[in-house]
Length: 308
Image 1 (cartoon, rainbow, N blue to C red):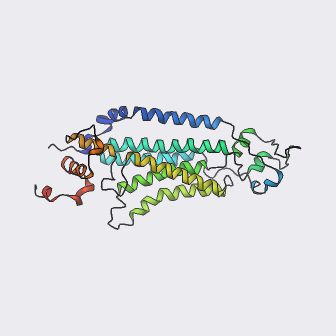
Image 2 (image 1 turned 30 degrees about the horizontal axis):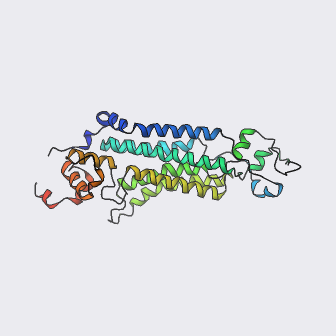
Image 3 (image 1 turned 120 degrees about the vertical axis):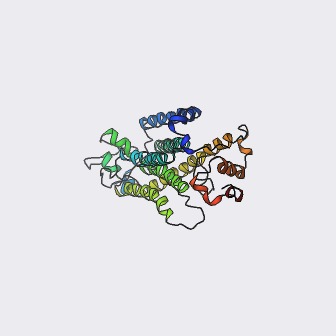
């Protein structure tokens, strides 16, 4: 059987085909982006805030340590750079395409979820007092005793968007996806005891955690907002990653599902019943069709060794 090298599956040779196959996914991804833009235009629920409720809302109104424009750089640009570097050495368009698509869904699905909850809950930020009363002079409705703000509307509007933390959820959505991706590529869970690999895997999660901590330090969020944001981003990242890639501890956890499906099709497997193909059969296909893969040197069959 002719050898199918990873280098044969480049953006130039297979990129258009892979993109066409997932055209509807890219359209849905664009729709998620438009929905999130619309959610940021919606006026959030203005939760009742009486005089006795301002105790935990009078923290100083500091600027962001990490501005909002820097978050996409951390959770999108950095992972995409890693994906691109891997593609440069492996020339696997399936991996590059699915990694970028999965990352996009992870971040935008998280953004829509986070902003929907923000608008619905309307929890005031810890620095709400100085957003509402920039001169420090509070004013309340004489009947309801609710706050009557006289600050800038845009700043007041953001003051009702404390729960959950958007910086944190975005950071965990992108960087947790990257952590899953790296764990599969370095085979961190191959049962060989190379615990040093975990340092590489934990690094993106540590960065996302530090982003969340700055939100509390800046008095833009309560700690529960950050915890909820980290949970939302991490869970959605896990679902999006596993939609495109096997579990990192899987023998074939180093490449996307589509790559092994392509190998099965190249070797003559039926394409109409992909779930009927067993893991052992896929392993045989990987060895037979792409024997140069560096990830399966320790899994050669005796019969393969005898050919040399």
